[in-house]
Length: 418
Ligand SMILES: *Cc1c(COP(=O)(O)O)cnc(C)c1O
Image (tube, rainbow, N blue to C red; front, top):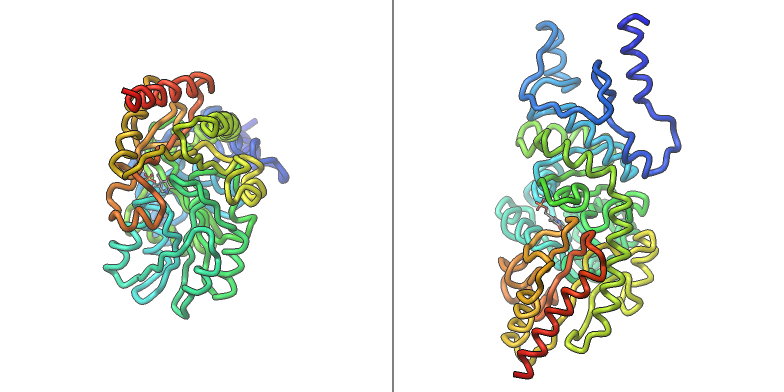
């Protein structure tokens, strides 16, 4: 074969046949390999791309095609975008530096002063602050409504409503909203629905198939899955990604680093088996916690006691995800907080941190950490009390996780009996 034939064969081989299943797309979707034929996707750590001649450079800069400069595009970042889009069933995706910058991109790209957003008040803490404080400064107003009561969303609609923003299940109380119902509501009002799919990932939940217009990701969480890098993305229709969000990233610069893109790209290959294993372990831990006398309540969509259990099972491929929360009994907020601190500090295997979506299990006190920047009123409105403990289950043996929680609960019992 001539070199030209080699190149044609290499590119043709990268065109996958139609109808492949998500697990296959997760390991196979990428740009064609380079002329070296690397099997694992290449990491292109480069700021600029050399152009063959000035006329080509002029055309590429004007049309944003091929590769010119790292803020605009990079082959490793492109492979990550293509793979994530395939897994979400989206036409296209655009990567961002973090999950929060994906929301920044969403609003910068889509809205202008005077536009109105409706958002659940139970979404991720920084998301609430971003909508309420930062976007408010630029004249984009947000109404916060109940995660689960669709009549509140309907009542909040205005002629200027352009976007509904939902996250399901929520952090830390795992409240589930009905994506299909919210999509119908948005479309009836001429608005778009964006779903933050960071908690379930496309391995469990594909919001676009349920009618959502855009999916947002904190790739920092399960897409990487091993707690290594920050990343984010928006997935959706080609016309929005290519004509709206792509140009905004190019101008505003919330670009994903190629190194981080490479790490998350490889993380996607094991996403499905991780999500299944971690969800099954979380269900076992949730059932165990329900039997503990010091525990007042367990929040986990996989439990039959969860208020939206049936909806969650329909929407999330029959699995609950890998995050649960539980409330410790306490007569006063101070007593509840002391109980939570005692249980958390008496564990020895679980990590005390504020991340989730790692192979290492993480235990968190939301009201003083992830949700510490909210006002007490905002926290109470979201139902996050001082006795609440969140557990993001990783890949340790499930018995070692319950043994560790047992250590924590035992220390609490001893302190209360002392
Ligand atoms: C972590 C998280 C974010 C923010 O992602 P970063 O990468 O930390 O900016 C947004 N939404 C949800 C649901 C998250 O868990």
